[in-house]
Length: 112
Length: 114
Image 1 (tube, one colour):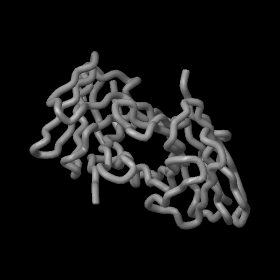
Image 2 (image 1 turned 90 degrees about the vertical axis):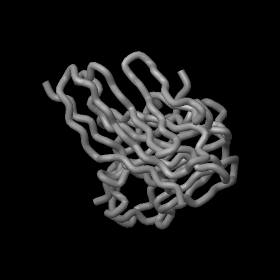
Image 3 (image 1 turned 45 degrees about the vertical axis):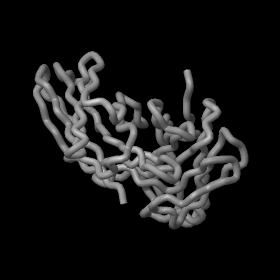
Image 4 (image 1 turned 30 degrees about the horizontal axis):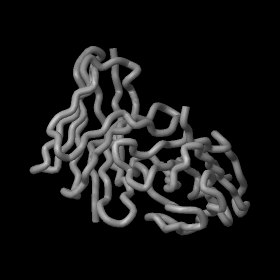
């Protein structure tokens, strides 16, 4: 079945760039997503990328997609303390009900 | 502002109690989902519904049931709460073709079973 894998923890210094990586298994997945979860809150859609794109940029966020290696990354430029959160990668399960398959989440800690 | 509303942020229940977690969405979404979130395990799908009165088991349905009598409301029921059901519960909704909107999540209910 489909599986999405992420490293569990990343620590960066304020002002540096953060790169969160994700691997997925379903090569037919049409959309891939990044969600952000702040402490004690639900998940918010941060950004998405359509499968025919290699890169998507949205202000401080850059998403890179390598379909050959089934690798997705999220780069946050000029990381701030407000970026401290858990980041979830997700792919669409093709066929069936188009459910999202989530990774376990990467906890980003930003320190001064 | 579109939203998914979960009725309680925090809940404390006793072992053996029947527990109802309520979720309401105002986006006219067909699909609704219940997840539980535990540290290191990410999100695990309990049940989902793709239409009124329809339900499908997710990855961990044991000990849970659901009800969807109206399109906007999806209830999660713990028939007899146990301490291993202490967790954060997240509700989400979506259109049938998830597309660029993805899922919209509620704020979560942190349930403690004592």
